[in-house]
Image (cartoon, rainbow, N blue to C red; front, side, top):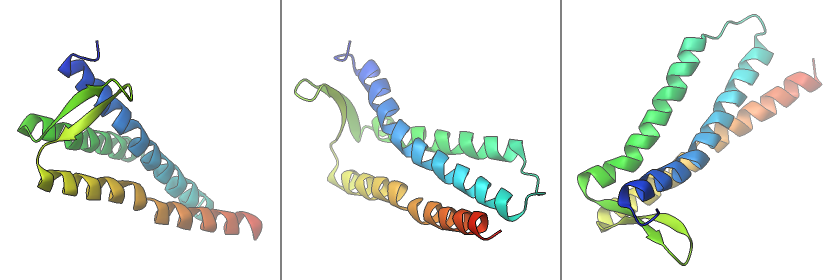
Length: 126
């Protein structure tokens, strides 16, 4: 089953998507919680939140499949690890993929930290 390239691509994209999307969900949760603690009467549009969540999910999937569609990379099963890895043939694309992946995980840390500190301060001193 994993030797099929389409299944391996689906499997690899799914398991690369989950950690990035989880960090983004934590970021969204922190921002909404912080806003509601600072301004309890504010109304947050559900459509806007849903559009942001769907848009980011689409961006993540597109980013991961773009290399496969353009022929820069392919997902291949590795028997030693039991995982479908994204093998990137083009060195230039590999460097940009690593940089983008690092930014994708590191960037949300600052807003999450700021929202956590703000929320804690509001809860402790109000």
